[in-house]
Amino acid sequence: MSGKIPVGEVRPSQLLWTYGPGALIDMPNLSVVTMGVDSWEEARCQPIDESRLLAAVRRALGPQVQRLMVPPVIQDERVDPFSPEAKIGVPVRPFPRWLRCVKCQLLAEFDSGLFDIKENPYRPEWTRFVHKNCGKAGGKDVDAVPARFLLACRNGHLDDFPWNWFVHGGPSECKGTLRFYEVGASLQTENLWVACDTCGAKRSMVYAFGERAKEYLPACRGRHPHLGRFDHDCDADPRAVLLGATNSWFPVTISALAIPLGKDPVMQLVRDGWEYFSDVESVEETKIVVKTLKKTNALMGIAEYEAEEIWEAIQDYREGTGEGVDVTETDMKVPEWEVLTSETPPNDWPHFMSRRVDSPKPFSEYFHSVVLIERLREVNALLGFTRVEAPEEMQDGADRPSMAPLSDGSPEWIPVSEVHGEGVFIRFDEKKISTWMTRDIVKERDVSMKRGHEGWRTARGLDPKIGYPGVRYALLHTFAHLLIREFALECGYNAASIRERIYALDPKDDGGPMAGVLLYTAAADSDGTLGGLVELGKPESLGPIIEQALKRARVCSSDPLCSEHMPEKDRSLHAASCHSCSFVSETSCEKGNRYLDRTLVVPTLKHSDAAFFMVDL
Image 1 (cartoon, rainbow, N blue to C red):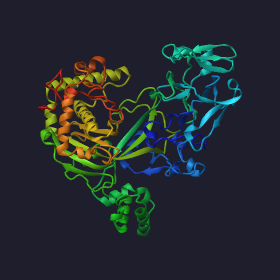
Image 2 (cartoon, rainbow, N blue to C red):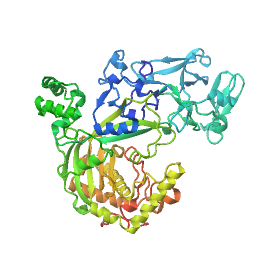
Image 3 (spheres, rainbow, N blue to C red):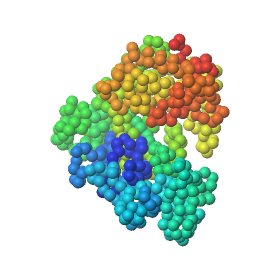
Image 4 (cartoon, helix red, strand yellow):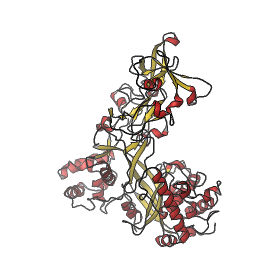
């Protein structure tokens, strides 16, 4: 909403992945920028308890972060548009500030007095600006649309396009009316022009891009429109970007699976619902809270225990004597690995229910175990964002990208989203992988990918010696991608809705060895699909699916170019992989389709002796 005018709707998850603080939302009739979290109504945000994720966020943003909160949403879609409930939402403001009349091509700022906003409470997405008394429309009001050019820089700043500076070739005292118009049949930049009515100056938009832009664009002003402030020490070169371009906002997120951290189920419930129990001072108050939680079903599983048991657990948790109270794990995946690989994985926790099954017989020598996860919850936290260039991958926090802030000052809470789903966890045989890694050809592929990694980072001014995940990761990562593509064909889920989580650590690494993949989805019901992931994880189904995935991967439609690709030659981050054989949606992939190599998984046209799976297909 802009002020208190509703302007449209987005899904809550989009406020983390697409339209978070600082991002532009290109509505049908206007464009807005999402304000920083310090402008949100915190009282309307629902807290999420996930202690491991909160600890990781604090390491990244500071100890002042106290809570993880879900963005405010309207619970009842049938709410009266004129009621206070209709005003619940995330604040936004119009951006860019420059508008163009579609009739007379007038180019001016929305607060210049030439434009009015037309609200539509019943269809908020139809809210729009109009040019009042347009001369070319006989004095009628005409729609005004956002000017579709902006400036952005690598430091996360975003600004209006400097129309006056651009058309006049620098600072000018001319305050004439500007017009934006098109010539020619196409909308290429050389056919888009801006002109001044008073002095007659005009310039093509082709000069806003490339090397020539340095001559016609000013220095970056360090503007953060979502915070209403300027950073005056920005030294990055501004770049012209188009409204709606994907490189104008890249989220920096961190996620964790909700897993039981202790063996005592009562203590785990108290930990999960601590926001309800933190102020409880007696067993009588505990009874009142428990009674409320049972009625509202706000804390699953609480009905199975008596108030006296819960009060005792509250006291232990508060005093720090309860099991697993101190959460100091720095690696997000190590405790998840311990739960997934335990001899008796949890099967009765509200947010995590799993069941161990046999490995598929054709591949029993390659896999140690398979776990069907019938219920899981993933919580994602937004740390910040970048512009122009996507954030580079983080390696245990040592290579965290330079992020633009979510708030004006150090945030006390961070927006999160949670998804519930199902999945399949496959643990590889450690002895088999360790033996495979000793092959000379595998070591050669490892060196090739590492050189590509070092060249890629060197070209971007990054430390080339850190961040390389290793050949073990490349094997597991490629296998996960092949299986995602095959699952999408078999179970009816869209490939973009299936995500991966790779567990790969060498024996010498802290927390190692680890070798496993978790494939999961946020659409857990199997009704309306062709089976669901859990069904496909059963031995009788998983074996043929893996066999078919490996068979497809042996030959790519882009071969022999794909199989012959060497990453050190073009300083890339993948070897024998491409969109035709193993790339998936970047929202599904941990590494943005990096560190992939079919040669490590199956025999290819170029190499037949580096494959981990040496089976007849």
